[in-house]
Amino acid sequence: MDTVRPLDRDRLGWWAIALALGALVVYLLYSFLGTFVFGIFVYYATRPIHRRLRRIIKQRSISAAVSLVAIAIPVLLLAFYTIALAMQELNRLLESGELSLLPLESLLQPYFDISSVIFDPATIITQENAIEGLRTVLREAGTYLEFFGKGALHLVVIIILAFYLLRDDNRLADWWRQRFADKEGVMEAYMTRVDRDFSNIFFGNILNAILTGIIGSISYTALNFVSPAAISLPYPTLLGLLTGIASLIPVIGIKIVYVPVAIYLLVMTAGMPAVLWFTIAFVVVSFVVVDVIPDLVLRPYVSGRNLHLGMVMLAYIFGPLLFGWYGLFLGPMLLVLLVHFVALVLPELLAGAPIQPETVPDPLAPPEPEVENERDEPGETEESAG
Image 1: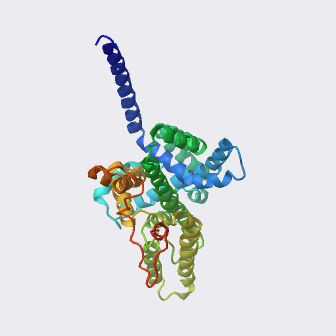
Image 2: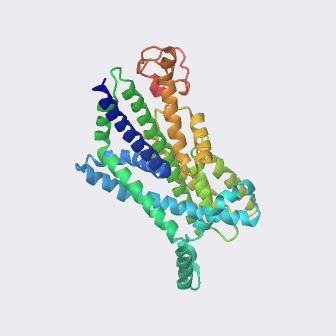
Image 3: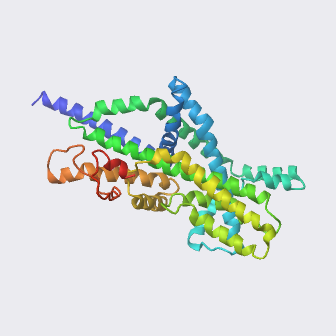
C-alpha cells in the first residue's frame, strides 16, 4: 500500500496538470473560435491550389507561402472590401425606406458603422475635390484604429494557421494515426470522410460563393459604368453579393437573383428599344461570367458530394444565427462531424457490437438515381451520390 500511494499521488498531480492545460486550450479556442474556424477554411480553400503548385515548387514552405500570398490573401481582402461596399449599399437601401429589416437592423448596425470607412475608388475620382474626400475618409478610418488593429492580428493568426496546416498536414495526419488509430481502422475511416467533406464544402461551396459574389460585384459595377442614362442597376455591389449567397442554393442557384432583376429591367425599359441592349448585356454577363464560369472552374472539385444538400443548406442558415459570422463555416463543420459519427460509429455503439469502419451506410446521403434495365456496378454508389 505504501508503494502505491506515492504513485497514485503522482498520477493525480499529472491529471490535475492535464486538466488545467486542457481548460486553458479550451478557453483559448473559445476566445478565438472564429479565427481558428476561418483559418481552417483558408487551409481547405487553398489546399487544392497548393497541391498543384507542389508539382512545380518542391519546397513545401515556399509552395504554401506562394499559395497564401499570391492567391488566398488577395481573395480575402477583395472579399472583405466587396462585403463592406455591399453593407454600405444595404444601409442606403434601408434608409431610403424601400426595404425594411427591423428585426435585424440592430444586429447589422455595427457592421454598417465599420463599413462606412471603406470607400469606393470611383466616388473619390468623381469628386470635385478628391484630396479633401480622401482626407475625410482617412479621418473616419482613424476612429476605428483599434478595430483595424484587432482585425490585422486575427488575420495574421489565420494566415499562420493556414500556412502550417498547408506545410505540415501530412506530418499532422501521420502523428494522429500513430496516436489515435485503432486496429479496426474506424478512426482513419472517420477522419478520411470528414476531411473529404470539409474539402467539398469549403473549397467547393463556400469558396465558390465568395468568388461568385466578387465576380458579380465587379461585373455589375462595370456594367453600371456603361449603362444608359435612362436605366442602371440598383445597388450593383449588393446585387453581386446576393448572387454569391444564392449560389449556395441547389438547382436554382444565382438565377433566383438575376432573373427577377432582368424582368425589372425589361419593365423599366418598356417602350425604349434604344436601351434594350443594356438588359441583354446584363443577362449575358450574369449567365456567362457570373454563373457559368465559376461553375465550370470549381465543379470538378465538388463532384461526388456525400452530404444531403438540404442538411447543408440548414447548416448554412442556422450556423450564422447561432454563432455569428463564423457560423457560416462552423455550422457545416459540425454537420460533417455529426453526420459521419451517426453513420459510422453510433449504430455500433448502441448495438454493443465491435465497430467496423465501412459496415454502416450513410443515412443522410442523397438517394441514388434509379437506372432501368441495368444493374449498378460495384463501387458506383458513392460516385452517384454526387
